[in-house]
Length: 249
Image 1 (cartoon, rainbow, N blue to C red):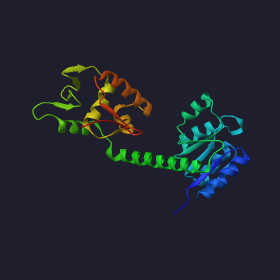
Image 2 (image 1 turned 90 degrees about the vertical axis):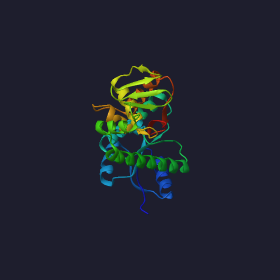
Image 3 (image 1 turned 120 degrees about the horizontal axis):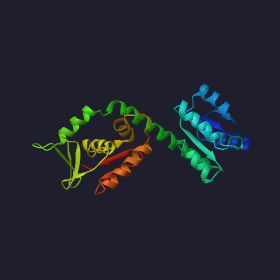
Image 4 (image 1 turned 45 degrees about the horizontal axis):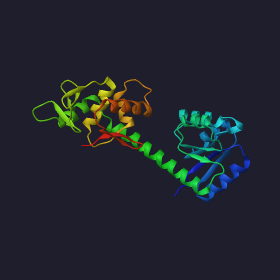
């Protein structure tokens, strides 16, 4: 089995040495050890690693966070932060780069290994999901077909939840026969859920279908769901942790 390649980006010599030894004991191939961001960028291009371990506070600054931002923009590589920082401002900055994990100094070798494996697993799941989106992407035509297949035999009505229905002839949603006033995006997302009752609508599907413009994020979807839930009389939109949302069939 091919060893998983790791690059360590850490400017403390003792910490980087301990990391290197621990990783090799757990069967990883440490292909480079870097003490600054520029060196790290060069080594990433050379070695194409499977995962990066980045010290947040390179050279006693937030260079690690800036490096992570660059990696997120240019490379499709998961990274894990190594940090002794616990102040809220630094953590909030780090969160914005969406790391795959955190390791707190002084690190435990077994926790280090577990964190890396979870990061690699999450990364693989996300990549598989993105590939699925290309084959399962729902456009407006396919959505209409799905909704039509769910309608009552003699009415343009698709029932869902308890006492809800979607009138596909006028694109309106009702609860106990009273219309629910929704925005265009709220209506589009609800139609996406109703068309696939019992099936998880992923964040990617929601972003692709609901937002015509670029720039939507998972947080955009979460905010939309929060607003939509506030307009619905009952809690019918369920969470699929880390994946998306669904309505039970």
